[in-house]
Every structure is written in C-alpha cells, then in structure tokens.
Image (tube, rainbow, N blue to C red; front, top):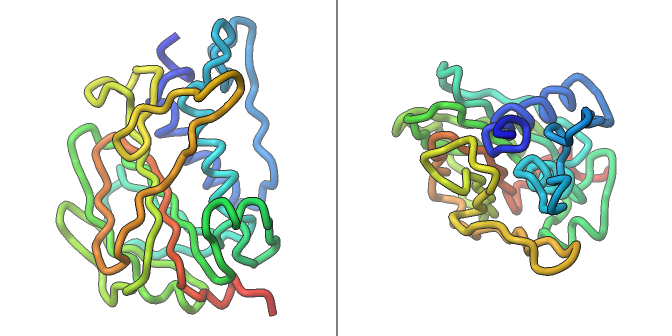
Length: 222
C-alpha cells in the first residue's frame, strides 16, 4: 500500500510507457504479485488506481508512431515525449479514439512528467513539429521559440491530495476522478486551450497535450 497503488507511481509509470515506446516496444505487461499492490485496480473495491487512468489516457491519446523530441532545457526532473496523436495517422488510425478526442490527421500528442516536488515549468511547443519532429522549450518561466498558434487539448494529472504523492486518488485538470457507476469511468475530458498560450506544468504532475491542426507530415497518411 502506498507505492505502486498511489499517484507517485505515475511519475515513473508514464516515463516507462513513453521510453519503451521509443525503443519500439508495442506492449507493456503490468505484473501483479499476490496482494494486488502492483495492480491497476484496487483488489478490494475494484476502484482504479492512479496508474490505471494514466494508462487509459496514454492508450487513447498517444499513437503508435513516436516522434523525435528536442527540449531546450537541462532540468532532469522534466521529461517530454511526442507521438502522432492516436487516430491522426502515422502507423494507425483509430476511428473510435479520434472521434472521442477530436483528433484529426496530422495532430500531435505530447506527454510530460515533472518529478520535482517544488518546481513548475512553462512549455512552449515549437513549430518544428510541423515537419514531423517535435520541440518544447521549458524552464521556470522559460519558453521556446516560434510558438504554434493552434488549439490544444490538455490533460493535467495530479495527486488527489496535492501535498501527498502517496495518495491513492488522482485529479484531472483539478477535478477528483471518481467512477460514475459500476465499471463506468469518468469522462476524462480535457481542458481546451488557445495554442498561443504556454503549457503550465505543475510540480509532481504528469499529463498529455494534443496539438490540434499541427499537420505534422509524419502523422499524415501519404
């Protein structure tokens, strides 16, 4: 209790999902020893543990094609990844995923992890993404160059108790995630943001950003 079943696990789980995708892995099998503390569901209540929501959003938003990322910062606590958005093109096109997330061909999905307990970051997505690469400038108030003036969908995941990463609950864009009924997930809806605004990354947080209208050549079926 209080480890892999808590929010803090997602600070490493999302990193693992993204890094394995970069290495070409197509599946991630989550083990569960006796007792269920490594499972994605609470074995007593069947409520999702925080990593479950992280896995669901990764599956829904991050497509199979991984894009190279250049980040203009040196802080080891902030990690940024990019894929073609699920359903946008690249290697696959999922109609159910794209219709649920508003994704169109050429859209790009970013994932971020901030392991710092006290540092926040400001990211500006770089226009290099339109050529099939992805860029992000970041820092404590720092920004990149050539921001894309597009629309974004943002999913910011934090602990249910913002001062305790060992809390077993999770918040999406500030709202506590609760099951809607038996085996019915909450909507997991994003916040829609003007693409000219920077992305604000909270301390001890993970999340995803969909860049709509990026028209990345790598994410368009030829």
